[in-house]
Length: 371
Length: 100
Figure 1 (cartoon, rainbow over the protein chains, first blue to last red):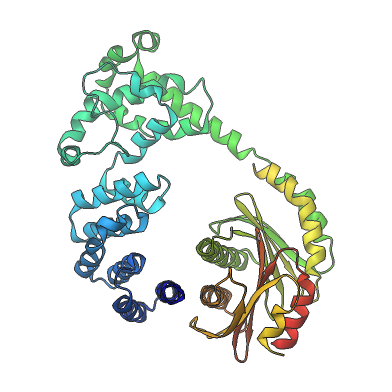
Figure 2 (cartoon, rainbow over the protein chains, first blue to last red; figure 1 turned 135 degrees about the horizontal axis):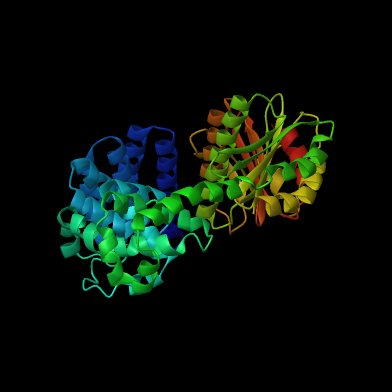
């Protein structure tokens, strides 16, 4: 039993190390360590997926496919396996298969940005349709038009038959149904002020190009269309209203952050404070140095936090709450605040405990302001 | 000071010394924690910090939901210590400063 455990832990460690090598760009080393490890643990599927990924990154796409597909039956629920098979087939130009794997990836994790992005590339209408489906489930019931299968380019219900359709049939879909889908938000949007609806309007230019959609409208919601008979006008009105909504969004008073943050800045040992998103984009900088330097630190801190999060997920021990990174000339105290990171740059002699005490006091305020 | 000294501190769950590429040199941990995994994580995070911030010696204290992980570059390799969140973090840090 203990031997088995040792084997398992050994297996895990070589895969983890390989992952470290890959993230450091040492693909050959990763492949070598994976091959070696797999020779000892041939049934370690995770390692095979990582090996496939390494081959893909090395541009050995055929090997990548062969490696992942050899264990696909066992790992078909793996997000990464499906994602990389998608990447491989995309690279080979087999868009049908690529699409199939990306869609499977999204079935497993509907928020996989990489798969979403690739699908957007493969299916131009993908994002709008998906957002419509998400934002307005009622949209699906709205058209009594006959083709229920074509309604959305589905995340969930994709058959091989459908996979073949989009390129040839999509233009038809544009003519018949998406108008119905587009027109509904056209009517509702100005009234209901939801941020998501802005994104719905992105699809409206399509109907702008094809004004015959106006005639289709009565099929969908007769009363609404009669009320807004000249469709072009309603589109224009939306175009006019969009900036207004933007103004509302921009009106979020980031200045409100100044007050709580200034309490931290009042500390003698604090050199600067900045708030960034967890993916490394600067939200606001308070005296942390030149903007460009701060942006670089933002990205670095985010990368470190992502690594820590990922690593601790492996240990099943929860993600990062805060961390202290000591450099020769300064110390970075980083705290997770909802979806953002609050980073305090301090002098070396600063007392991190004190920083955290102050920071904890203002974190709630920041969270409230940033939503 | 030896690595084993860290685990004598109350609520310290494990400690170890690991090479830059993640191979464990020396390590001790309670049954729940695998020094190999911790070592790999320590190497990964330290390398990330060094590469991202372009520094030669990395030192970090990472707080997660239940644990605190100390990472420190030393002459012999990367030292890591993991303890419970309610451990005497200050004491561990002092010992780590002495060790490194």
